[in-house]
Amino acid sequence: MVAPLVGMVVMTQLGHALAPTLVTENPALLLLLNSQNRYLILTSGQLDPLPYYLIGGLRLLAPDPFFYLLGYWYGDAAIHWMEHRTPTFGELMRRLERAFDKAAYPLVLVIPNNPVCLLAGASRMPPVVFALLNVAGTAGRLLLLRLLGDAFQRPIDWLLGQISTYRVPLTIISVVIVGFVALTEWRKGSGELEQLLELEEDLEEELEQELGDGA
Image (cartoon, rainbow, N blue to C red):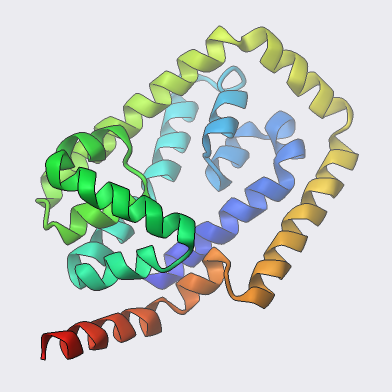
Protein backbone atom coordinates (compact mmCIF):
# COMPACT_ATOMS: atom_id res chain seq x y z
CA MET A 1 0.00 0.00 0.00
CA VAL A 2 2.86 2.38 0.69
CA ALA A 3 4.27 2.35 -2.86
CA PRO A 4 1.28 3.93 -4.66
CA LEU A 5 0.83 6.52 -1.89
CA VAL A 6 4.51 7.48 -2.14
CA GLY A 7 4.11 7.73 -5.91
CA MET A 8 1.17 10.09 -5.52
CA VAL A 9 3.09 12.29 -3.07
CA VAL A 10 5.93 12.55 -5.60
CA MET A 11 3.43 13.41 -8.35
CA THR A 12 1.87 16.11 -6.15
CA GLN A 13 5.23 17.74 -5.45
CA LEU A 14 6.20 17.55 -9.12
CA GLY A 15 2.93 19.25 -10.01
CA HIS A 16 3.66 22.03 -7.53
CA ALA A 17 7.16 22.53 -8.90
CA LEU A 18 6.13 22.65 -12.58
CA ALA A 19 2.77 24.38 -12.11
CA PRO A 20 3.78 27.76 -13.64
CA THR A 21 4.62 26.00 -16.91
CA LEU A 22 2.01 23.27 -16.95
CA VAL A 23 -0.96 25.46 -15.99
CA THR A 24 -0.76 27.19 -19.37
CA GLU A 25 1.15 24.71 -21.52
CA ASN A 26 -0.36 21.38 -20.44
CA PRO A 27 -3.24 21.79 -17.96
CA ALA A 28 -4.33 18.15 -18.34
CA LEU A 29 -0.91 16.93 -17.19
CA LEU A 30 -1.01 19.36 -14.27
CA LEU A 31 -4.31 17.89 -13.08
CA LEU A 32 -2.95 14.39 -13.50
CA LEU A 33 -0.04 15.26 -11.24
CA ASN A 34 -1.86 17.48 -8.78
CA SER A 35 -5.60 18.16 -8.60
CA GLN A 36 -5.66 20.55 -5.67
CA ASN A 37 -8.41 23.16 -5.67
CA ARG A 38 -6.33 26.05 -7.00
CA TYR A 39 -5.24 24.06 -10.04
CA LEU A 40 -8.76 22.81 -10.67
CA ILE A 41 -9.98 26.41 -10.70
CA LEU A 42 -7.13 27.71 -12.86
CA THR A 43 -7.60 24.95 -15.47
CA SER A 44 -11.40 24.98 -15.50
CA GLY A 45 -11.61 27.23 -18.55
CA GLN A 46 -8.80 25.54 -20.45
CA LEU A 47 -10.14 21.98 -20.56
CA ASP A 48 -13.30 20.54 -22.05
CA PRO A 49 -15.72 19.04 -19.52
CA LEU A 50 -14.80 15.39 -20.24
CA PRO A 51 -11.02 15.60 -19.61
CA TYR A 52 -11.57 18.03 -16.73
CA TYR A 53 -13.96 15.77 -14.85
CA LEU A 54 -12.27 12.52 -15.84
CA ILE A 55 -8.68 13.47 -15.04
CA GLY A 56 -9.53 15.62 -12.04
CA GLY A 57 -11.92 13.01 -10.65
CA LEU A 58 -9.56 10.06 -11.01
CA ARG A 59 -6.68 12.00 -9.46
CA LEU A 60 -8.78 13.12 -6.50
CA LEU A 61 -10.14 9.62 -5.94
CA ALA A 62 -6.80 7.83 -6.37
CA PRO A 63 -5.56 7.95 -2.74
CA ASP A 64 -8.97 7.46 -1.11
CA PRO A 65 -9.24 3.63 -1.36
CA PHE A 66 -5.78 3.25 0.16
CA PHE A 67 -6.61 5.39 3.19
CA TYR A 68 -9.94 3.59 3.54
CA LEU A 69 -8.13 0.23 3.56
CA LEU A 70 -5.55 1.59 5.96
CA GLY A 71 -8.31 2.42 8.42
CA TYR A 72 -10.22 -0.79 7.71
CA TRP A 73 -7.20 -3.04 8.32
CA TYR A 74 -5.53 -1.21 11.20
CA GLY A 75 -8.42 0.58 12.93
CA ASP A 76 -7.38 2.68 15.94
CA ALA A 77 -3.69 2.15 15.18
CA ALA A 78 -4.13 3.92 11.83
CA ILE A 79 -6.05 6.75 13.49
CA HIS A 80 -3.31 7.22 16.07
CA TRP A 81 -0.70 7.20 13.30
CA MET A 82 -2.58 9.97 11.51
CA GLU A 83 -2.94 11.94 14.75
CA HIS A 84 0.79 11.76 15.45
CA ARG A 85 1.92 12.94 12.02
CA THR A 86 1.92 16.63 13.01
CA PRO A 87 0.24 18.75 15.72
CA THR A 88 -2.03 20.21 13.04
CA PHE A 89 -3.08 16.77 11.81
CA GLY A 90 -3.63 15.63 15.38
CA GLU A 91 -6.05 18.44 16.13
CA LEU A 92 -7.82 17.90 12.79
CA MET A 93 -8.20 14.18 13.43
CA ARG A 94 -9.62 14.73 16.91
CA ARG A 95 -12.21 17.14 15.52
CA LEU A 96 -13.07 14.81 12.68
CA GLU A 97 -13.41 11.84 15.03
CA ARG A 98 -15.95 13.73 17.15
CA ALA A 99 -17.89 14.79 14.06
CA PHE A 100 -17.63 11.36 12.44
CA ASP A 101 -19.45 9.68 15.30
CA LYS A 102 -22.48 11.89 14.61
CA ALA A 103 -22.37 12.41 10.84
CA ALA A 104 -20.22 9.79 9.13
CA TYR A 105 -22.08 9.65 5.82
CA PRO A 106 -22.37 13.45 5.34
CA LEU A 107 -18.66 13.88 6.10
CA VAL A 108 -17.62 11.36 3.43
CA LEU A 109 -19.98 13.05 0.99
CA VAL A 110 -18.92 16.64 1.71
CA ILE A 111 -15.19 16.35 2.51
CA PRO A 112 -13.85 12.98 1.28
CA ASN A 113 -10.22 13.81 2.12
CA ASN A 114 -7.55 11.41 3.37
CA PRO A 115 -8.36 11.60 7.12
CA VAL A 116 -12.10 11.17 6.49
CA CYS A 117 -11.46 8.16 4.23
CA LEU A 118 -9.26 6.64 6.93
CA LEU A 119 -11.98 7.18 9.55
CA ALA A 120 -14.53 5.63 7.21
CA GLY A 121 -12.42 2.51 6.98
CA ALA A 122 -11.73 2.39 10.73
CA SER A 123 -15.47 2.64 11.42
CA ARG A 124 -16.07 -0.29 9.05
CA MET A 125 -18.34 1.72 6.79
CA PRO A 126 -19.56 -0.69 4.06
CA PRO A 127 -17.22 -0.44 1.06
CA VAL A 128 -20.05 0.08 -1.43
CA VAL A 129 -21.54 2.90 0.64
CA PHE A 130 -18.11 4.50 1.02
CA ALA A 131 -17.44 4.27 -2.72
CA LEU A 132 -20.80 5.81 -3.67
CA LEU A 133 -20.48 8.67 -1.20
CA ASN A 134 -16.87 9.27 -2.15
CA VAL A 135 -17.54 9.41 -5.88
CA ALA A 136 -20.62 11.60 -5.43
CA GLY A 137 -18.75 13.99 -3.15
CA THR A 138 -15.81 14.23 -5.52
CA ALA A 139 -18.11 14.89 -8.49
CA GLY A 140 -19.85 17.61 -6.52
CA ARG A 141 -16.53 19.22 -5.62
CA LEU A 142 -15.43 19.24 -9.27
CA LEU A 143 -18.73 20.74 -10.40
CA LEU A 144 -18.52 23.48 -7.75
CA LEU A 145 -14.95 24.38 -8.68
CA ARG A 146 -15.81 24.36 -12.37
CA LEU A 147 -18.68 26.78 -11.75
CA LEU A 148 -16.42 28.93 -9.58
CA GLY A 149 -13.83 29.03 -12.33
CA ASP A 150 -16.49 30.05 -14.86
CA ALA A 151 -17.72 32.82 -12.57
CA PHE A 152 -14.23 34.31 -12.25
CA GLN A 153 -12.96 33.49 -15.72
CA ARG A 154 -11.85 37.05 -16.59
CA PRO A 155 -9.49 37.53 -13.63
CA ILE A 156 -8.31 33.93 -14.03
CA ASP A 157 -7.48 34.58 -17.70
CA TRP A 158 -5.54 37.70 -16.67
CA LEU A 159 -3.60 35.72 -14.07
CA LEU A 160 -2.86 32.94 -16.56
CA GLY A 161 -1.58 35.56 -18.99
CA GLN A 162 0.84 36.88 -16.39
CA ILE A 163 1.97 33.37 -15.53
CA SER A 164 2.52 32.58 -19.22
CA THR A 165 4.59 35.73 -19.69
CA TYR A 166 6.89 34.95 -16.78
CA ARG A 167 6.58 31.16 -16.73
CA VAL A 168 10.32 30.45 -17.01
CA PRO A 169 11.45 32.47 -13.97
CA LEU A 170 8.30 31.45 -12.07
CA THR A 171 9.00 27.79 -12.78
CA ILE A 172 12.62 28.14 -11.64
CA ILE A 173 11.48 29.80 -8.40
CA SER A 174 8.80 27.17 -7.89
CA VAL A 175 11.25 24.29 -8.40
CA VAL A 176 13.72 25.85 -5.97
CA ILE A 177 11.05 26.40 -3.30
CA VAL A 178 9.58 22.89 -3.61
CA GLY A 179 13.06 21.37 -3.57
CA PHE A 180 14.12 23.40 -0.53
CA VAL A 181 10.99 22.52 1.44
CA ALA A 182 11.31 18.83 0.51
CA LEU A 183 14.98 18.76 1.54
CA THR A 184 14.25 20.54 4.83
CA GLU A 185 11.42 18.16 5.67
CA TRP A 186 13.57 15.17 4.73
CA ARG A 187 16.34 16.27 7.10
CA LYS A 188 13.82 16.82 9.89
CA GLY A 189 11.98 13.60 9.09
CA SER A 190 8.70 15.51 9.15
CA GLY A 191 7.66 15.34 5.51
CA GLU A 192 4.73 13.37 4.16
CA LEU A 193 7.06 11.18 2.10
CA GLU A 194 9.16 10.23 5.12
CA GLN A 195 6.06 9.48 7.17
CA LEU A 196 4.75 7.15 4.49
CA LEU A 197 8.08 5.36 4.17
CA GLU A 198 7.96 4.71 7.92
CA LEU A 199 4.28 3.80 7.88
CA GLU A 200 4.67 0.06 8.43
CA GLU A 201 7.05 0.52 11.36
CA ASP A 202 4.85 3.19 12.94
CA LEU A 203 1.73 1.06 12.63
CA GLU A 204 3.48 -1.91 14.19
CA GLU A 205 4.47 0.30 17.14
CA GLU A 206 0.89 1.52 17.50
CA LEU A 207 -0.43 -2.04 17.45
CA GLU A 208 2.13 -3.17 20.02
CA GLN A 209 1.18 -0.28 22.27
CA GLU A 210 -2.52 -1.13 21.96
CA LEU A 211 -1.82 -4.76 22.81
CA GLY A 212 0.28 -3.67 25.78
CA ASP A 213 -2.44 -1.34 27.03
CA GLY A 214 -5.01 -4.10 26.59
CA ALA A 215 -2.92 -6.51 28.59
